Image (tube, rainbow, N blue to C red):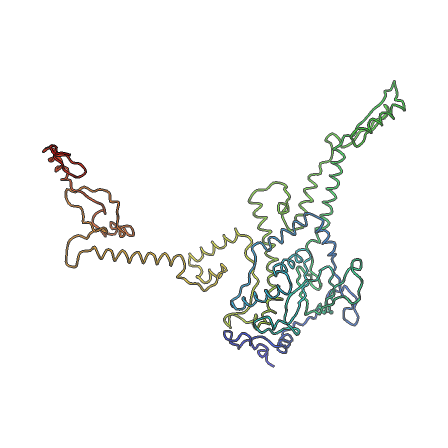
Length: 550
């Protein structure tokens, strides 16, 4: 059978027929057989073999229980794990895809899973990330159920009889893996502690297709990932030992040690005197003292400020612990050797980069092991090539940027490249994480341009009303309908300017011949003077003769 026959979604209408794109069980098995990777190399030989098959379940080569105890008891490790987890989910997450229907479907499935799991989906994801940081291994079991009566769309199970209704975690420290000689997992078993659980031969066992194993830093041929906390445990133990020694040193030097000498060479001490002195010192609030006869003398080494200065050793092992945890000392509350803003910013960036590396791995594992299977069950196709088929149903689990300062710098750089005509608008929006399709009429530049066009039209209409008719040679009026100044007139400020002059000044670009101001006739003063000479008085613009009754 040709390979293309296993890919029926290549010819399906992606617009009108979503449900027809799901692979049935026969097609899925055929596709899995064609695309199966042949493993020829043997795996890590850490167990007994019988007839070229592994004989039992493998346990982790690392002591996960010891790691969990260290996280719960040591403050530095606890704070480092909290720092990783807080930064990991600092800005939240979202599901993105070229197909908005696929995104809506996944969010709807998540809502149903929250009801089945009786916990928020984000809480489940945070628990998964917590196991990833602490143990570098996560084992997720799929729970199936019949959703046909509740889910609005038809669901087709990819593996098993029913679609997935939720996920739950197995304690990583209790998982045992049964693999074949080529490292392929065959089944998983939960091995409980006989001291805390009743020993049961029928322990829970899950088939390999029912378990999702997420890991970080897994060595080739090994079954489990390597926790990065393994290499810091010895440094933490050494640091705590030094701190205990310093505590003992402080306790010893904090209280004085009395040296009590009795007697001289001429008058040796009597036994009763020494006993009486011992009673007196015993009554003092001290850790003890030395009572010596004259012929005995004891020097206390390390007293009077001559004790060993262990601060340098303490700082050294603190730095070793911080480096082993992958954080800077100031990230977990250590204030050593000062430091300026530039140094701390570089250390913060290094921590952000490490967290982002975990986010990339986490997002891809969620996409591959959870999203793809859920999309297949809903009739979507997450493996269609978007370059050939148009819109792709592939959905991505995307974290928002946790380093806001770096994000602002990157966005400004992308905008500068767009302004410099190095990239197109679509490329700039895609680089910024925005949808390529946009309504350009709602942008700030479009709105400002519309306002300017509207103002220009209003100005032209106002100008057309004040311009002289065709054929006349008289000068145009101003926006307020005033004629230019005449000879003998004085200008006064105009407090009532027209709308035309406010939007576009008439004295610019040759639109008007004189300033837009009010004027009065200078001959008015001579008229007043003549009236005064004739015996008249001017009161509020009314002319009254002096001999008249006021």
